[in-house]
Length: 215
Length: 417
Image 1: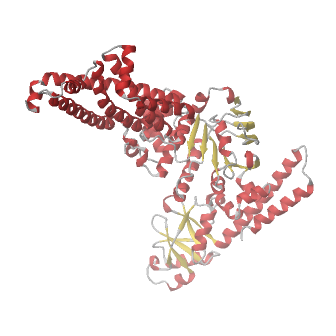
Image 2: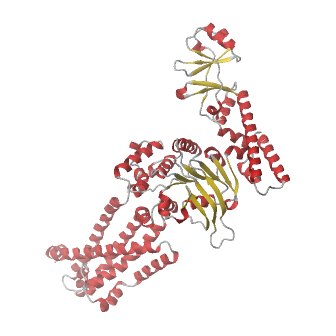
Image 3: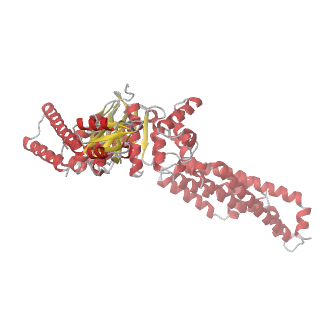
């Protein structure tokens, strides 16, 4: 069976896997973004705290994904839970790092001006600092998404959702008729998804970055 | 017009950073009256900006107090306090992600104004600072020139109509020409609004131009002299002040007085189409030997000398020499002097609104006026000082005092050269 015949006859299943893959990545990116920005906001004003946050999240990223999931299975069991936890942890680093860099990069004179005209700490953060730090944060989120696209494939090892199932099944049955097609379909599916997401980020940037600071 | 400002009193205001042996600001005590513009001027790093920031508590004082309209503000919630104090800083401090209108609307919005009132206020403020609301409202700051940004910065500071305005080197980052315009605008605004303004700069000329009174600050914000610009120029309190004011105090003094303050001397005039003999007779009757020909709208067009009139044959509009430069009644004495010096015969026509004739100044007359002004300043400053000395509990040693006064006087005269 040729590759396109394979894709044609398993279309339903592939689409379902792709949907699950995208959905898992999207949800984890959202969680990682919220948590990452929160960590950034809490730590960026103190040198040691910011250092600790960046070091910890980079240390997490150095753990091989297979090992991470392997370690999580005894704790949280198989399926969705280890996948979501692992993906969220991996997604933190780019978001945290860019949030800290972005918030620190806000011109101190502007923060001073915001204070001087009577903005409270919370208002300053929401109206001035986060909007100005948003472009680098968005870049961090984009990087996190690309990263998680690939790592999510490993989730199939823990019986998680997504296109990784195709790849793993193919690897498990190497030499059989459809093995190569399965690996190829999973991989290409992930690449296509990654490209689609990237395009979505360009659009998101257009919509959310204020015109006054768009490059 | 009633003053809308509030008096500010600084009492023993001190800032000591942990780890520093010397305080950065050491016991500043001064009073700014309601509706007055006081300029803090001093070398960079003297703590003038720190002193300013203690007024709205961007920097918390280590000791001492700030009273606004008699109320000690060190006990107030800083956020609330700052909403009642306008704040304008160098390079405008506009938020680049917000439009001009959004920037100006920030403080009124925080004060809970209705949307309609905020919109009306934004329009009003843009007009006040000389920007067309239709054109500028929806622009982002990066699409404005430096001077325009600075105007919006001032508009934002004034948007919620605060009684007090703090300005921290607001015109420091724009080119000299624009800076001059912005200073003129601020003077005009202040004539209308009568806010209490505390203005920080390291530029003595800016201080002299803008301040009702100037506080010359030395190291640790020690007040070297706190007085009117005229008094500081005529009688610097010590070597530090005279060194800081620099040379040319007498020339700087010329910026402080405008022609209209002095009354512009007249000059014989003639109208187009007047019969020649009548014009000749008028010139002969006057003490001068030159007169101005005015056009139908009363604007000076030509200088006519006696000779021109004697030899004139055709219409008067072709006799004499065309009027080159003119100065307005609002020109400072320095601008007038500049114009007179540039003119080949040492006189220049003065115009009022719409370029209508208002008089003429000549070099000799102007010099006499300037000398008179400087002498009067010196007299006043001396009197002022005597008054203060008689009320001061511990008089300074007489020889030190005499030396300063003598040197300062020498300065004021000698520096003109």
